[in-house]
Image 1 (cartoon, helix red, strand yellow):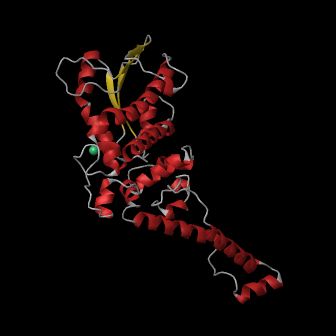
Image 2: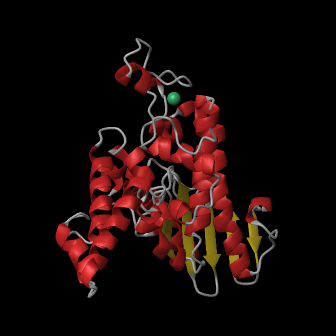
Length: 332
Ligand SMILES: [Zn+2]
């Protein structure tokens, strides 16, 4: 009724703890079972002669204690969710590359519940994309993307790969993450900024006596370099260091690859800047999956920039951007 659970959303996931990627609902059936089991334990361990008799009669539950029962239920549900061809695909594809913080948006519950329901449905391939209509429902329609008509319309195509959405929709989401990083850098170096990151409009170049922060700036180089316009550059003349910071929101199973890609992409620029300005230059990728996945490196990258832990804001910006894209394209 309120869009909190998609009609095709996963039901096992509903009853899993939020820190494991579930929705944290309590199952009435499990609750009754667990109560019965604690009652059995109580009767079993009681010194009371009547309680002992009750236990001997065996009218209560078996010998599994209530905690073991709860753990078994979680394991079973987790396994069932993971094994389902569509619902479990996200879990299977990301399980070795993302950290537990990736579930923070569920654990802390900071999204509106209907947005949460949309993101979980997207992870479960429960949204009716053209691929689902054509290949699963076999409706005899084209599986191609309704926007570009060039590639199959999967959730991740809509979220990260569609050429028709890159200029506006992806840029809007990407720039929000970049603004959070820029806003934090301005705070760190005492540069001009608004009170809230979402009101913050980065200037092309901002500086104080020691530090210059560039935003979306074409770096002039002696040699021809293809990639010379990273999202943010921080030149610290008092420490002789330079940071090349680039932001991306790829498909969740590609977060580690994307981090590597970013580092590769700016190697020429890194060398060139090192030579021109005689500074020690590092490349920092800031990558969050379109459906919230966070790699084990991101926290370290934020520390390398001397920024506070803003995983939550970055993740939220990525998720809200993705929800907006899904709603616009799928008209839901
Ligand atoms: Zn497309």
